[in-house]
Amino acid sequence: GNSVTQMEGPVTLSEEAFLTINCTYTATGYPSLFWYVQYPGEGLQLLLKATKADDKGSNKGFEATYRKETTSFHLEKGSVQVSDSAVYFCALPHSGAGSYQLTFGKGTKLSVIP
Amino acid sequence: ETGVTQTPRHLVMGMTNKKSLKCEQHLGHNAMYWYKQSAKKPLELMFVYSLEERVENNSVPSRFSPECPNSSHLFLHLHTLQPEDSALYLCASSQQGQYNSPLHFGNGTRLTVT
Image 1 (cartoon, rainbow over the protein chains, first blue to last red):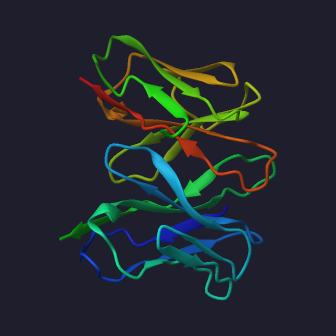
Image 2: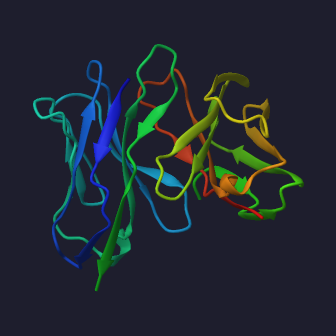
Image 3: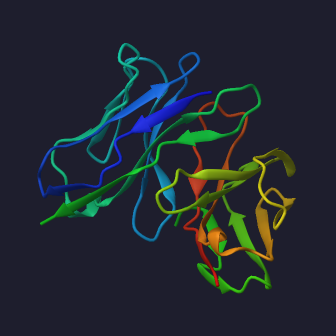
């Protein structure tokens, strides 16, 4: 079935530093790819998505490009803020007809210090 | 406000207790989910309901019993739990049949089994 592998962290950065969180996937076909974020004390929320190869998803200064050549969907932000401290999850639909399941990576905890 | 409300936010129960978790969504979605989030483990899908019918059950122990009385409400009934069941339980909803419909999560119930 489809799967994702993301760097586990934790990642600690100073404010205004550049962020990259790596995510690679294994999939049948070309499924949509997602990044979810979980702030402390909250559930997950969709951060961005890309639906086909070479698509770039973006939101709140974060970007990720769907690259089929390298089967990657790395999350990037040019200048992180303290408020970006959270856990980030890469995800894609589980394979199989009729499956409603999203397969999530293990999550990467980001801490941004002033 | 995520549109998905879970109660209670925190729950402590003994192994012989019976309790229920509640989830309500105000988004008009037709599918609802229970996920278990444990430290250092990937998110685990427990149950999926679509149009109030259970469509997936990922071999969850029978001490967890879901109930979906209508498309807006979802319950997880708990009895004779084990300490390893302590985790964050997340409810989510989505619109099945809508391409790339993302999951909308509640803020979770933090369960501690003593």
